[in-house]
Length: 215
Image (cartoon, rainbow, N blue to C red; front, side):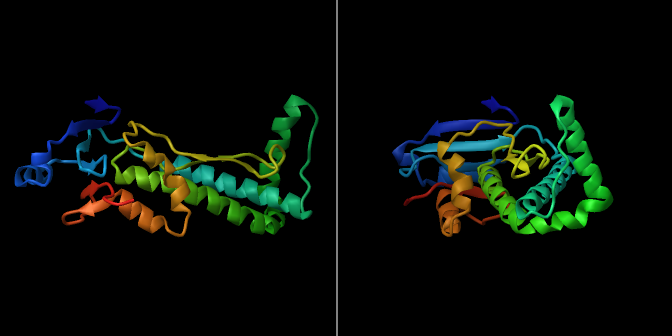
């Protein structure tokens, strides 16, 4: 069944066929990835790409650089070392934001460095959380974009960002995958990811994946 940029096959496997040589041979010939949806190995999901979408790395890079700048500015404001110019009215909102970026590039960049102690942990939290979703989605062959960071000038936001998100171009078959961002930031994230998506067979980068037999 085509679903976005992926073909997804959701199949029930008879108990007599589970672990059989015929099933193993068929899975070895499958050109994509596969994993078990349940602990009893009764439901098998096969996924393969139909089309490939190239990431827009320039856009992602520009957004994260702007977010770094904005969070540094917000941190500098909280530290009391920087005061942005605020203008009244709706037009003043955009003028103030433009002036912030202009001043940051021309002469205020060194002042914004005072905000590193605020910007660094905030960006780390956003990055680790979104990478959790991204890595988990990639393990299950879900077509997803790298994280999009959303910068907001400190003239509009006290933290310099509205967060980050990823774009899904194919459906999420297993709802447990949505927890990847949370668990990726935990100390036991490596164990959790290995249980949720453990390499099967030779363990190649494009290898097969199965769900946990114990959780």
